[in-house]
Each structure stands twice: as C-alpha cells, then as structure tokens.
Length: 345
Image (cartoon, rainbow, N blue to C red; front, side, top):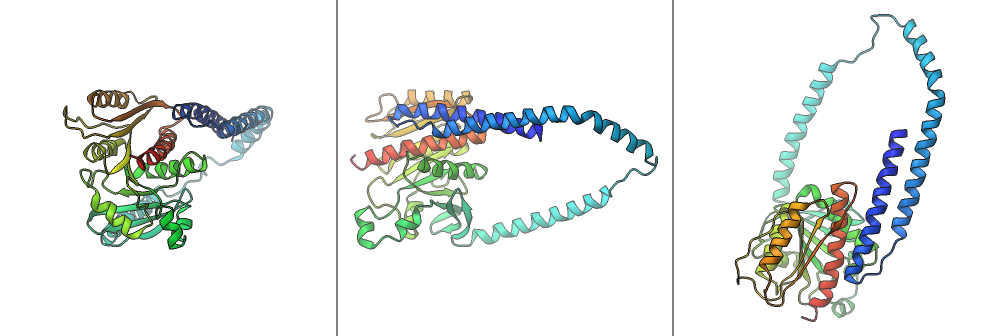
C-alpha cells in the first residue's frame, strides 16, 4: 500500500506538471489557459504522498512485533508441511483456456468481417460501433461522442440550419492506441477548447489513404455528418501518421486540415504539393526521431502555395499513453480552429 500510494502520488505530480505545460502551450493557439485541472492533480498528489509517508511511519513502528510473531509461527511449523498447489494442473487449465480463447477470437474476427456496423460498447463517454461499410475494405470502428445523440435528435429544419450534423475525423492509428484517441477527443471537448467529432478508424490505418471518398460517403450515409465544405479532417498517430499526412498532401481541398502525431512522415517531391495544405506535426518532447521527421517535412513544404504547417514538441507526461492522450487533445483543439477557418476558405 505504501508503494502504491507513492506511485500514485508521483504519477499525479507528473500529470499536474504535464497539464500545466499543456495549458501554457495552448497560448500559441490563443487559447485561454485553464489551470484548475493541474491544481486539482497537484493537491491529490500531495495527499497521496502524505498518506504514503504516514503508512511508512506506521509500518516502521509495527515491524518489530510482526518479526517476533513470524519467528514463532515458523518454529512451530512441521518441516514437510509447506503448502503448495498443483502447478501442472493450473498450467494445463491455463493452456486449455488459452486455446479456446484463440479459437474463439479467430471465429469472431471471421464473423465480424462480414457484419454491418453494430454497437460494441462505450468508450470515454461515447458510443463505439464496429463492422463493415459498403465499398470500404476491412473492419471500421466508429466512435460517436456523447453530444451526437442531441444532434441526431434535432428536427430536420434545425439540423439543416446547423450544417446537418457533426464534423468528422478519419483516425489512422494502431488498434492498441485508439482508447487514448477517444479519451483525448472527449477530454478536449470537456476542456471547452474543441468541438465534438465523429471519429472513424479503419482497422488498417492506411486503407484508402490516397482517396478515402468511399469511406466518407459510407459514413455520411449512416450518420449525421456536417454537410458544409471541409467538414472532414485526418488524424494519424504513429504508424498511421504518414497516411494522414499523405491524404492531406493529395487532397487539401477535401479536408479542413490534418494532424500527424509522431511516426515517420512522407517524402513529397519538390513542386508536387497542391495549394492549401494545412498540417499540424506534433510529437512528444522525448520523441526526437519524430521531431526530426517533422522538421524534414516542413523543410520539404517550404514554398508550397498557401501552406500552413505547424510544429509542436512540448507535450510531456509520465508515460507514452498519457502523452498520446495529450497529443490528441492538442490535435482536437487545432482541428476545431481549422474547421472554423475552412468554412471560409
């Protein structure tokens, strides 16, 4: 318990520092900093560390008594009476269970490949669906934010006046990182700096990266996606970052903008980039290889007509998953700004 309290305290302290730095970084985008979250984390960290210290003092005082009791118990125990389990049986049961799980998951994947979109649960307050879409190879996940229900229930006239739905993102990220994406999108909305977005994540992050019009049409046919020009954007993370950037470089007139978070990036030929590219290239402060990639791409796009390229490497936190969460929040803030600007381009 002492170690757990100390660990939680250190984690909260790092989280508070990261939140403070992130709010300061938001001033670059003329966002009003809100330090309440950082202050609450700092207070919680102090309490956790104080509890860990008190527990350590108590444990030091009672350690001698436990040592005497343990010595008496050991002296009265029989030499051959050491209790034990049947590790062979446990291993056999675990192996058997693992085999059944592998077989079941394989059959589930085969079944899901031919299934339409169905609800599979909730994540970060939003509704999560998974299945296939017409004209789109492979599986697709769709995350509907908590605010989607209100837009879907709006009367036809009100929906048309408001642009008939929410703006949408094509999310290109490994499956293992999608939970941080949903959490980051929801957190940006809760922070008051971002719009709620419908997020569509192909199982293959780079599917249809050259032209995802089939994906966008299929999603718009089933969900309330805004009908205004440039109501879509791309968000790529790690292995999907290059594909999100490639989509923006190929069709900047289609998207409000794109964000590439870490990972390797494309190598466009000189003079091959259309006008109007909007890109945010953001990486964690510790991710030096990704920062080098971003600098190289920005240099390659120097001179591109009407291009807006932004770089950021200020995000820090205690673990890579928390850094991904903060990067996605930054991306949502940036894309909200670009959606607003894109409506007038």
